[in-house]
Length: 71
Image (tube, rainbow, N blue to C red; front, side, top):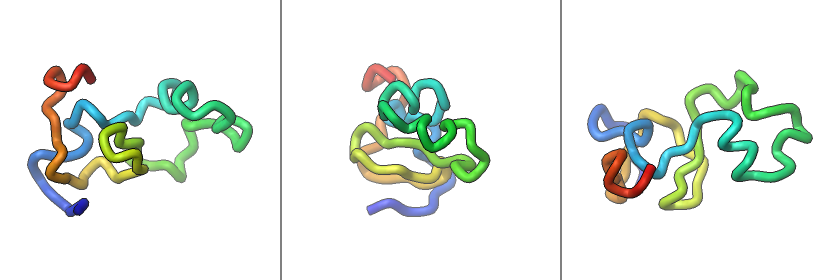
């Protein structure tokens, strides 16, 4: 279950991908819609651990500190 949290947050997880160029390389064809730089994405990113698009301020029980899971 994804919940609002203060600590630990998805943004701090090794599975969280929010860099535009990295998102575009992970999702071929994404840039046909424009680019991952779009403001509508805001602070959302892709969770590699759960294969979901999530908001950076959320948290879940699969959190992995950056460096633990290779992220």
